[in-house]
Image (tube, rainbow, N blue to C red; front, side, top):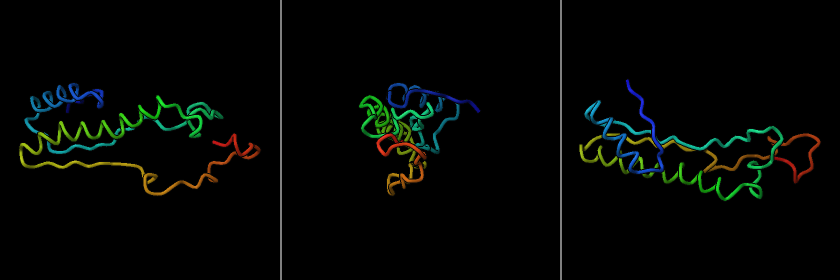
Length: 118
């Protein structure tokens, strides 16, 4: 089995991958939309991305581009091929945090002031 990678925010790149998949397998049966940018705070103790007031607009836009626009473009490109064939499955995977808010007390760091908590 071959693996193909591309920027899912680039529709022409997705079209190129679709062409490769069709050349190799002749069809697309399933699309799993599960891409996301890394939401973890990589530097221990850093508040750069762990608090909304510190979250950059560039990071926000990058997350929307991958999580929403990327899923839509993948669905349009690969789903369009499935629709043309009259069969196929698209699975969209998302965080349950879209529906329920996390209990921030679980992430509290002892000894830190409230405004310095992640």
